[in-house]
Amino acid sequence: MTDPVKMTMIDAINRALHDAMEENGRILLLGEDVADPEDGGVFGATRGLSTRFGEDRVKSTPISEQAIVGAAIGASLVGYRPVAEVMLMNFMTVAMDMLVNHAAKLRFMSGGQTSVPITVRTMTGSGLSLGGQHSDFVEAWFAHTAGMKVVIPSSANDAYGLLRSAIDDEDPVIFVETLPIYWAQGDVSFERIPIGRARVCREGSDLTIIAYGQMVPHSLTVAAELAKQGKSVEVVDLRTVSPWDRDTVLASVAKTGRALIVHEAVKEYGVGAEIASVIGEALFGQLKAPIQRLGGAYCPVPFSKPLEQAFAPNADSIGAAATALLS
Amino acid sequence: MSNYPKPDGPTLRAIYEKAARIQFNDERVIKEIKAGKLVMPFYSTRGQEIIPAAISVSLTDDDYVNTIYRGGHDQIAKGFPLADYWAEIAGRVTGACKGKGGPMHLTYPAKGIMVTTGIVGSTAPIANGLAWAAKLEGKGRVTIANFGDGAANIGAVHEAMEGIRVDGNDPDEMYGVARWAIDRARAGEGPTFIEATTFRFNGHLIGEAGGYMDKELYAASQTRDPMPILRRRLVEEGIVAAGELDALDASIRAEIDAAVRTAYAADYPDPSELKVDVLVDAIA
Image (cartoon, rainbow over all chains, first blue to last red):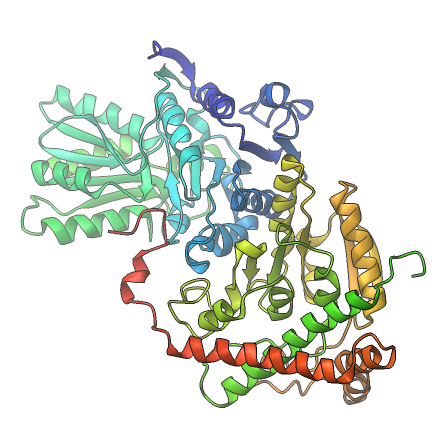
């Protein structure tokens, strides 16, 4: 066991890729500018890896998301484990045929003869003034597609541990990295974190906040504030959006009797709707208040700073929703 | 075309055998659909048999092929076992894909048939990854990505590839260029784009008559059906005796007939299969 080391999420991702490639010679990396001659990725997440492992295993590609994901699928069909980088989550739209029609379905359509053990890393998040085509969270599309898994880490430690598990996984995993917390520091313990299991990151008895990604640190801030007022809030970090950990969520809400689900993606038709529905089906009659959801506004991510700040949930809006639920 | 390899007698006979299996199989599928025994979309490859037959005589089971919904010719040329093929298109649990893929997603990795896609333009990006893997392995495996002319408009298909146009109905040209390209790929000298011209005899799918086809072009294509032309040539050039060809045709038809009967006798998949092969672990 290694002692925990303080590092940013982006460094934890770099380290996870490094450790995975060191351990398994069949792990490959590809994406725009991921190799060192092109600077090791636009944010440097893959810096140093092509120098260490060679450009046969770490390939910079043309700007063609279909080609990136397609090549990852092809190599994965015959024993390799490619980690593809699609620079921003909005660019996944260009590769949707490869992701939805192929990566997610080849195992089923071949009757289990082939499988697609790829990891697709992609970055996103509002708050960097990138506007409508460079900021979206579209995890619900992939969670709605049978045959793939969706993981969104909330900290440097989770990014390391979940990425190692994603690369090990026998199914395609969409690994979503939240840009505004890319440079947040945290202790990283270099251990794998299982896919499909949530984490109770703060215990409480009056309300459960279910969140993932950047909404987890926001929710923890709110829980600490409300504790000062004598309110006890439990925060569950989903970690994996699909398949999600029903047992942990239902156990928590059964205990607290109140649920608030928070994500940055647009609220309408979002992941929160599915979670709310399952909670309602399982715990009808035990709830002390209607289930509440918070999500991005029903609009494209705006550019103008005040608009962008008003778009996504933050500690203020989560705090207000939590307080209303508790009163 | 004079600088490309020439097929010898046994190679031409092998091309004919593959092409005849493709033709007879195609005709039998159409017959079963029209008799109401099969319910499926079928994209006939009648008239286009020579292209995959002449390519695949230069391939081994270790080489990969990706093809499309109109892919019966590519699959059979590459050695898709007919029993597994028929059970799959009949939706039976004994099919190659347990009846879960169907005619548009026939897969048989043991023969290198890795992906059959229903999406125009999607064979090439995945073939790229298969070729990358083959290059890393260094065993000289070749990857073939098949697509129709419609897919040539899809951006992802355009890579830096050497391009050659051939008469896809001419076994000498088709074999020669394919052999040259395959040898080049096997030696690690890069990809080749082969544009093989041919004619699709039937409509887009069976049940759609193709009324938009130019009548003169269609009539001309029927006089150039590559199958009787190759068959006549094998006899005229003394490569295969007429009686021997008749026996070969009969044995292929008998093989197809056995596959059809075995398929129909098999069970359909159990509904519990909806939860299997979705993810690595069965869905709870």
